[in-house]
Amino acid sequence: MSKAKFHASIISLYPELFPGTLGASVIGRGLRENLWSFDTINLRDFGTGKHKQVDDSPAGGGAGLVLRADVLAKAIDFAAPKGDNRKRYLLSPRGKPFTQKLAKELSQSEGVVLICGRFEGVDQRVIEQRDLEEISIGDYILAGGEVGAMVMLEAITRLIPNVLGSNESIIDESFENGLLEYDQYTRPVEFEGQEIPNILTSGNHQKIKQWRDEQSKALTTLRRPDLIKK
Image (tube, rainbow, N blue to C red; front, side):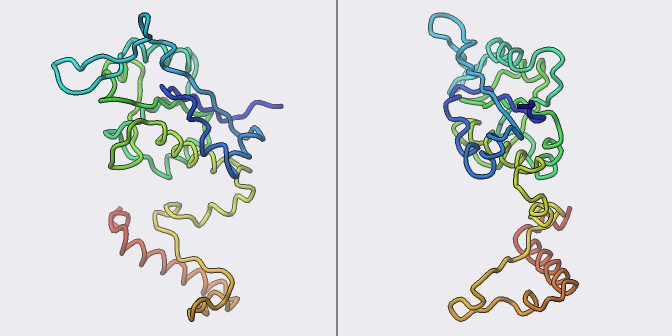
């Protein structure tokens, strides 16, 4: 079997969580068909001392623990040795937002290295020394970066050719043109007294496209005015 073009390396204290949802449905099928691949690296394997310690108290005091720079650096160097040009992302609530645009860019790359943050954060020195880019899936806090890594990989791998089966299905999705997707309908024609809009059963493809464009703009204005401003 040929090597998948896109390969993700995931550094985590809980590698057993993977593939998780990534092993199901069309994404899982793409994984089994080697359209994309991944491996996990257990951060604990690089811990120090008898108990394989990976964290320590924050310098300057404060609550919680911080992932050690020396431990994480060893794991990163193992996952991505010299010459590995894949982007390195640290899942972090203070990171820049993950977007559909970035997902598309990454789907055309050789892959990514994802570091699943834990505790209060990561020693800043390893972020700088290993050229990590902090990235966030939303303005909320999770217990760790594992779920965020799955979100990123699902968004990325579904854009890899042939993973979805039909590449046409991604053309009119939300965010593809900077707008939210229009309302969708299917059979039955009548449901609890409400019918499918007549325009969608008219067969006039030009008017259908115009209706959908108007729907997308109206919905985006209502729900995501920030996208309209952009």
